[in-house]
Image 1 (tube, protein in one colour):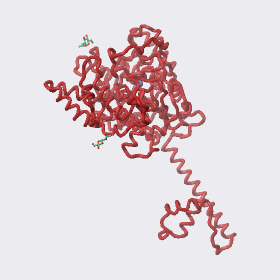
Image 2 (cartoon, helix red, strand yellow; image 1 turned 90 degrees about the horizontal axis):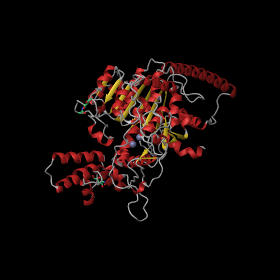
Image 3 (cartoon, helix red, strand yellow; image 1 turned 120 degrees about the horizontal axis):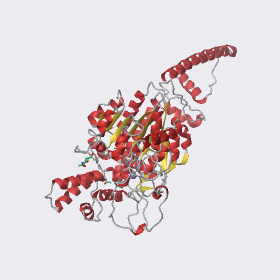
Image 4 (cartoon, helix red, strand yellow; image 1 turned 60 degrees about the vertical axis):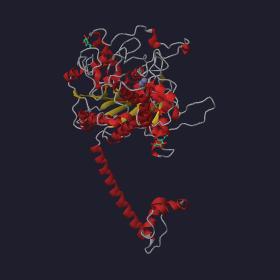
Length: 596
Ligand SMILES: *[C@@H]1O[C@H](CO)[C@@H](O)[C@H](O)[C@H]1NC(C)=O
Ligand SMILES: *[C@@H]1O[C@H](CO)[C@@H](O)[C@H](O)[C@H]1NC(C)=O
Ligand SMILES: [Zn+2]
Ligand SMILES: [Zn+2]
């Protein structure tokens, strides 16, 4: 053994000129566990006595030191046990952070990992933080389709039950199902939601609202601030979607009515911040007054790749996540119960809908960073806690491969193509629309010069666009692809990244956890409802009680408090059958990325 390790030891050890021979022997003894024979001046019995005495002394000192350290540990971490016993969950106070990477499939990880390695010159085995916490996979179908939407996906997490696409924590029979967040609040936990899209969008809505169709975001906004049967259940909300909270009498409103949901929220005790200055005033969560409503964008917070350039306007997912963790842990400091926080990387999904690999890699990196911050929080926090993360579904049918020609493809995709892009396709299309609106007299050739020089070269890092591609961007005729899709296609083809849909797909998605042993029931392949079951069991809360309360108190309200029911109830619990859909062509019914 010593022989094999000699060169290693020689390197690690100070050079022999500076270290005494004695020092070297001690190191060898430590490393090999074997004492070198030494010359003896005194007899064996003498040394045995000395040895025994020293041993006794050392062990006594060790016992005392360890005892003091243990006591210190106990006083500074009053409830943290670290080992959670055979029940896999802590017996005392506990926190739970549930992270959702909306629309992130397994290929999103391969894409982003290779992008990062290329960008930073990292070795082949360099992986994302997420990669180091993979524990299983989730099967995602809903009651009405093999391909779920975010509403049915999040209902599986919040209620632990399958429902139909579009359902916001209601079941196929249109009855509300109690959610883990509502039950956590009832049990004494504090609760929070952090997203980068509208706080009224399907994923966050499913934790604190009940409506029959996800499109009812005005109604969802009211419910989330507490205007519904259970009263206020969310202590902290950070994200976008301000327009659904403003009355239709104000300019930036997207509500159909004149209800002022901000005023309603204030009436229920919320403090409200609406911009970067307000966010900075939260001091990353120190001394924050809860309940808190923070809406930092009219609709979505910009994609991370674009947000970096307007960092003084919009906070990042990571900043919002750290703020929420700090605020909730301070607020529960003296409580018996901890907190439940849901953090969503909402727009990985949007990048998938847009088939935009540039937007996607930066969204996944931003999510990975927030994931790392949560791990760091759990490491340092005094209370036991777990982080579980998963996706509701994959979006885009993403492939890190693309056959561009008829001939058998070469096995390549080129992450380096994505490196020079500084904007999302969404941002470039918006710049184009803005440019045309403000320069109405421009000739066609002036527009095409602008597209080439500013949008394609500076924005996308593409210097070899063809005239046909530039024309496709400018083509606004019926049936033409919208510019946002053309930009995304231009960069995807060059990187040889493939997409099979502008919608979702049915592939299983990954499950992550802070430690596998802290989320033992989720190791392996699971139905998405089991993630909801896990949250409920970890928090040890009663969903049935909440469901009963929702039904009882809901019955006293107008019977459409959850919005209009879906008329054809058969579609809610059964799969569609084949009906020759392949024959329907064209873009007559282009949702163009609006249906998530
Ligand atoms: C605003 O909402 C009120 C009802 O609350 C409605 O009567 C009115 O038509 C709405 N106005 C607009 C411009 O939508
Ligand atoms: C990225 O841009 C640099 C210069 O701005 C250029 O040299 C390089 O070829 C570009 N890379 C790709 C893949 O287009
Ligand atoms: Zn989704
Ligand atoms: Zn989606």
